[in-house]
Image 1: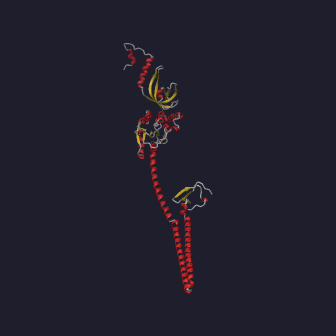
Image 2: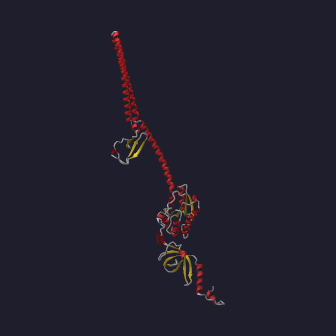
Length: 462
């Protein structure tokens, strides 16, 4: 094949020479067409952040170097601030800076490489957001006590979503799950996570109250630092902080920490733990109610046993068995005494009548006629006096009996209680008569005319 130079010797007409600008333009077009998307890995040197917001730096390895420029429209999407000496992975296109005829790389994406670089980028973002107050505790919102609709921002194919689904299905029967699918790894993951959070908030803005999402779980399963990097991006952190819906971050394993953990309203060590957090209230309340039902049944059973015991104790109390018997015995004694008095009076009257008859027979009727009348009158008076005396004695004994009965009634515990008094006992059942026998905050039993109460000693006065 003939070379282009040799072919030009046989051209009938000599080609017009190009200007430098035209040549640079053609080279630029061919270069951008041929290398419109290139990935390179290199170290940054000579980094300059211009006042315009553009970044200018040189990419170099052990043998070569390449100038690069990252315009402000692109570097706003880059997750950290580059610096000299950091190893990066760069995506962009090759072009020519026409005024100087220098070819360069126009950077569209830039990521740190290696654990050290990722750690530096992480600390840069964390410091910046902390300075702005995005991690402040007063900005964190309480999670709803009874969430009914849970939004999950994660990959539909990852283990995280299935773990969340399994835990919620097992622990609660009232929660609905709304999956908002997104990438959780790769160059576009941060942008997709941000849009997913914004989409959930837009949905809530126009949804009915019973259809709103109550809480969002944003996360993924475990992975390397590079795999989890999307959750360290500044735009994701700002989307979490701007969300009207409370957010639980659940990224990686328990030892993994991301920027999303610091800015979210609650951090869960794993996606499964996040599901347990949102289902915790329902689970605890159900267990609490079951426990209280059992406690109530036990309390009622205890009360019934206690009341039966108290009733049996009262029924067997000496107050209700001995006192009526004593009253009955006293009544029998009074009746016996009254009968004895009547019999004695009758016997004495009978003797007097017999004596009167003897005297009447021994004396003449004439002399004794007047005396007989006198004796009859005396005898009638004596009989009347005896009857009065017997009545007086019986009345006195009856009055004495009433007094004795009143005294017994006054001494009865029930009568004392009816007058407003009460019987104070220690928890062991001993009657309390001295304030020095009890201490402050001790519990006592108080028996009233009707019922019992238990009390706690607050003040003691001797």
